[in-house]
Length: 196
Ligand code: 5GP
Image (cartoon, rainbow, N blue to C red; front, side, top):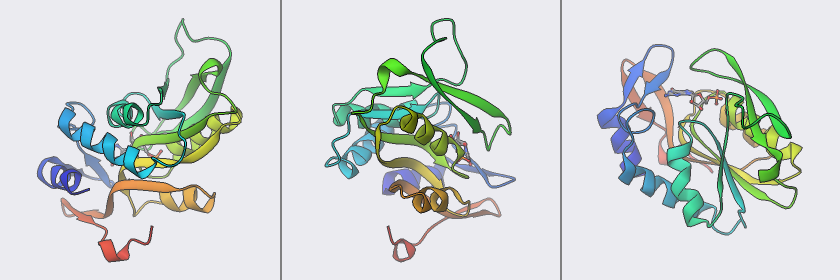
């Protein structure tokens, strides 16, 4: 998605350890116009899948998935990373190891919001090793829901996330695919190298 690639090139910063900082439009300050375009693109790619729920993880997954859910006429559920007083029982839970924070957190979704007759679209901001997406898949499977696919804003294709998800049989749609992050430079995967 060209507007997203341009935002990454113009506003992204490459940090050591293969981390891309995009705090100025996605992970801290939010470019609402770009998020609407991102949401529309996800909705377009999954429009024929009969999506009944969109699932993401708080907090950075919420902005890019909000408009996708709106366009697909489906509720958006964000898995919580911390237990709260209002979310104690009847929960689906899964452990997710965070690539950037280097810690494991327990994600939770209330059972009342996810059922076996749901068809879900999973959305996240980044795909690195696939842990967040696998955690959401685990939650959806516990509910017995059908998983239509995974929508990712920024995929770091040099890490194994996509391979893990595809080899488990899931469709992955990423709006920007990064081949390399080195020398403070972002290199996108060439379109002719993309087979999906
Ligand atoms: P995974 O679970 O696929 O290993 O990593 C995805 C999660 O880690 C995302 O939810 C995102 O929050 C975070 N993440 C992974 N790589 C990056 C990165 O390069 N930049 C930022 N900002 N977040 C990342």
